[in-house]
Amino acid sequence: MKTSALFALLMAAATFLSAHDGVGFDITKCRDYSPKVLTGLSTTKLIEHDFVNGVWTTTNKNGSEKTYQFTTEGLLQILNTDLDGHKSYNSIFWRIDEFDSQSFLILSEPSGSEKLLSINQTCEGLILTDVVYNETLEFDYQPLRASIKSNLTKAYMVGEWTNVSVFENQENKKIKAGSYFNYQFSADGTFTCDFGSTKVNHQETGVWEVSKDCQYLLLHVADKKCNENIKSTKVIRITQVDDHGLILEQVMKTSDINDFFGADNKTYAFIK
Image 1 (cartoon, rainbow, N blue to C red):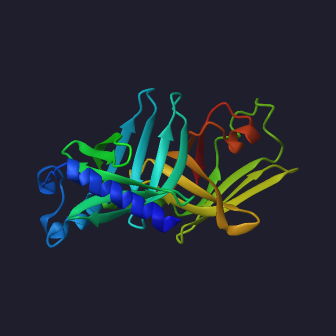
Image 2: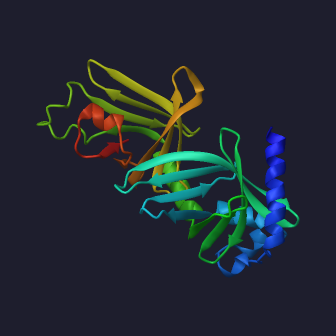
Image 3: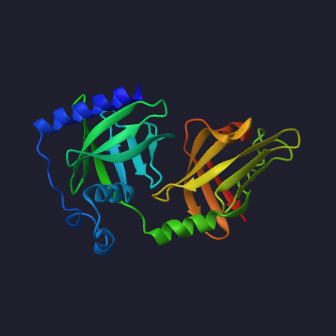
């Protein structure tokens, strides 16, 4: 079944190529990449380098936005922003394949379905065209933050963090006696989140990472029945972080943290 689907995509690619002329793109004219890094790379590898080293955004007709981040492991992470500014997360797999001397982007859903898109790189971003339905998607390009910024943010995150803000408003009657809220981010990429009170305890574990633009903390929460399975992914804005302080903002539409503490303020401060 999968073979026949791939054959159909290749036939669609052949039909697309017969109707469109390939357009060359000189990556060095629009992107600030080191010539040493690009030397000797094939066309496909140049495209992969461009995808991985950019942050790509689209705006839908209704005003909602999506941010796309291509990882070197073949995962395309998508941060969705609705009209109220709430974030959500989903991911699919990506790869670049070459057919008849032209490179195509292949997007694979977890279900196994695949989409084949032609690639037109521009100085402003990308124009991707679905070769089956002839639908186009335009991505705006933003360069990644310097690697030193990314590495520093990740280094600051590692450690045990104790919340110091959720309990400041003692007049909030929803704050339960003996309440606590702590994070532990380990250097191996795992995390533990503990919150609760003298009567109830909650714990989440999983894998943490910082988004490629260094703006968000992504918490991939493990299924309690099987730690190897990811149950959900939480998106949290990193408002501020250094070697002794951390401020996080809950930006998803629903938050178990806010629900538990009954906090109107979605921003939480921590110290090491």
